[in-house]
Image (cartoon, rainbow, N blue to C red; front, side, top):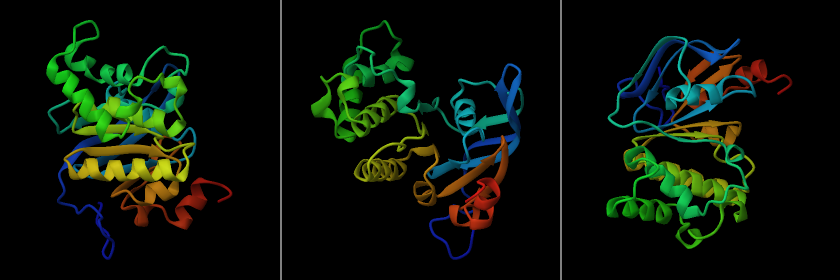
Length: 244
């Protein structure tokens, strides 16, 4: 499914899926969104979810994260820990009275609970996430005081603090300057090398083309899957985005 001769690093057919779903349907009361999706997310790779607004990218991420329940179909996770979900920056209010450190500490709530004191190991995990994202010096700053790129790195650090082997990101580079996009792209590549499977929804075709695999969505249906060079062709994009 993911192999295309002459292109590297296209995930080969024998790669182990981290997530697989068959005939997946999901949506909201009175508004179906995903319709009969069948695909797999390769383990230890980056997968880009691509499609126009309303195509179902965020809904699929929500299903993979477990915050949206499928209405029908089968969904299987081949992992030992719950996914870590990083929403769009706009989903986190600028006025929330949270420091960067407090926001990253929230990533430990799934393990510890929101009302229990963090352990020494929890604090060490938070410090590692802050350092990995290069924002240790911003730990005492308010989230609302940060630039877009800094804030996005804080949200990704919160995801890393969950210590999951599956990181789900919704438009992590939208609205960022080229340097911020480059830094986040390099980080995601490094995370895969460290054993994390990364799935990101994106409008940015340049970002999508650097992924190992791609799912192309249109009106809640799967319009293509495979290596980005195979999926993101001019004809496919013209068909989905009019005009291209």
